[in-house]
Image 1 (cartoon, rainbow, N blue to C red):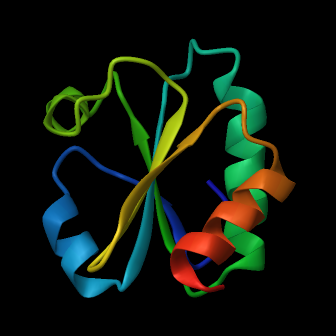
Image 2: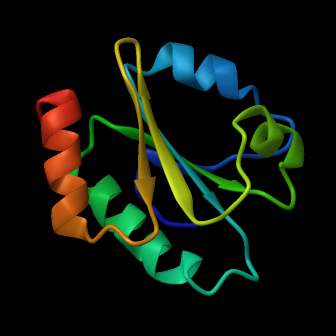
Length: 110
C-alpha cells in the first residue's frame, strides 16, 4: 500500500458502488498477485494516482474480489476501467503512461 490519498485497495467488505457514487472520476484497476503483466501496469497506476489527485483509483485483486470482477465482466488482467457519470472507458495492460494520459485527457478533459 502507498501513502497516496486517492489510491486504495478494495477490501472484500467495501461497497464499490458507494465509492463510485461519491467520486466524480474513478479508475478501477483489476489485477492479480500471480499476474506478471500486472506489475508494470500497477506501477503506471501509482504514477497516474500521483499525477491526477482528482481521480479516485481503486485496485481490485480479482482473486479476493471475484464477485466484483464478475460484476464488471473481467476475464483477463491487467485491465482498468475509467468510470464517471458521463463515461466509461477501458485501459489495457499494454498502454503506456503517455497513452493513458492521452486517454484521460480525451475522456475527462484533464
